[in-house]
Length: 204
Length: 204
DNA sequence: GTCGAGGGGTTACCGCCGGTAACACTGGCG
DNA sequence: CGCCAGTGTTACCGGCGGTAACCCCTCGAC
Image 1 (cartoon, rainbow over the protein chains, first blue to last red):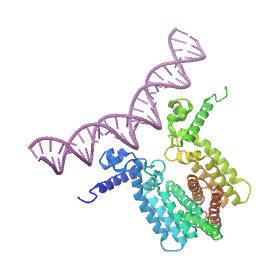
Image 2: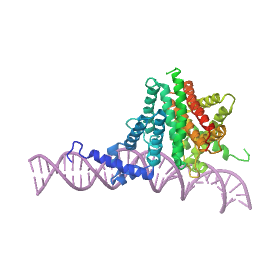
Image 3: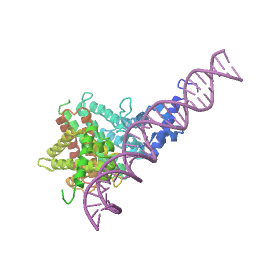
């Protein structure tokens, strides 16, 4: 391997996959030593690659976050009536957290306290999702970027779906379609009210 | 003091107040040693009183949770139109988290990971709030206790307000009344849609 | 071939945490 | 006086995140 990036990058990728395995097996509260053991190396190598625990968590979260956000964006931006798009997005979210609950727990739980890396804040999954949604909502309602209303709505909607999904997940995870229906109704009601109010005037 | 509870209870109260001071000063991630130092004693006494860190956190959270839940219940159950009651409840919630952000952070953050006491799960603030709201919603919609819809709604509503409030708080905390208005609109729209759908049939 | 230089890897450590065992002090009681 | 119970302390354990110091293997220069 005499590539521009000899094997640093591949090594890093392998380490992240090892970390991923161990997180999926033992949950998000995992020690650096156990990750290193899973990767067949020792701690200092991990630290040379990622700086500190926050750095590793951030790198690990970024991969999953990118993937999940892309899926959600596709679901929301696809074809269909607005209501169908909302429903599809909710379904995508719930299906993902049901299929990979450990990943989901890691993403939601990691940014709180654990993953405050030394160099710069880690924009967590929920934060990035909210930011994306805020842009979409502002566009949908004809509000300027960064409008207070759009920001609040995005945070509120994300929080609603996250909280409901969280409860549903640890309650057993049955009846996914029923949950999709309920959440879509809730969001749709809120959305309709918002459109009504927004078209009535008062942007920011 | 020759009361039925000699001074065990008073001592415990004093320890909790010391813990409260130190949490309000240093945030929710506080060591047992520093709490003990603030109380003027050493660690083993703390452990004799509360078992483990989770026990102390649970006792500390319970006081604040009881108080906050009572205030919210009063706000929701008071006089006025349904919309006014929702608005008043949201305002109460936001005012509280604005006035005591450290307490709020402690309540929301503590139950996640840190405060899993050895003897029994700690029903966190958000969980208790959701349970209360679920009962109220089920009654309001004429659904049986524990109905899936009421549970989902309660979790979703709590999550929405919590997420929006959280963002607003760390974004500077300006314009509380505007946030109250936005959240009330959102919740009201969702609620109206739900009533419509619920009266149309389909309970659980 | 021999010798340095360098870098990937390890061991062994630090300080802090939650949690606990074992000991010291002090007062009542026969 | 000896004894006991309770209360508080010191001193420790294992494990964590994080790091310093060393070790050894390779590679190029002479």
